[in-house]
Image 1 (tube, one colour):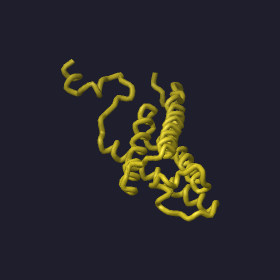
Image 2 (cartoon, one colour):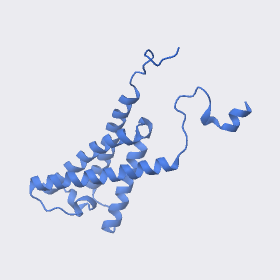
Image 3 (cartoon, helix red, strand yellow):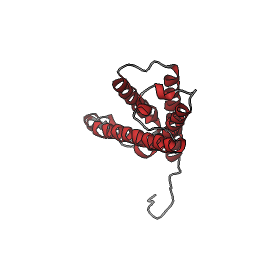
Image 4 (cartoon, helix red, strand yellow):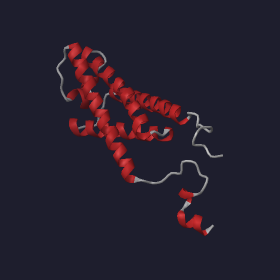
Length: 166
């Protein structure tokens, strides 16, 4: 019993997928997801700008003005943002691989995006459309990421095979 207390509850025998606090892993996952978020967002915006013959700029990513649904360029940016949410969900599945952590990482990515928008534009985004689009993007990224992670976690564990020792 003393050995269990000394080792902590994280290393109890028979515990499935014990959680070990690893800040380096968490920070590296956040950085990887943030880089993936912006890299795919830039690629989607660039490709959609070429297709729609719009001028590409950083304002499309970091300002609220370019998410206007009443203009063609704004609709293209919204489509790019939602496509980016889908690819970021695949990033959650590839990088995080845990259903329970999808909301945490998706929120962190969108919070960092909010801070970058605030720093770039010099003020907190004030349009309702910016907030709605970001909340929908967050929900889309979270739900799709959880779906992909859950499918991986629910795969059958093979019990019979050449390496099974029962």
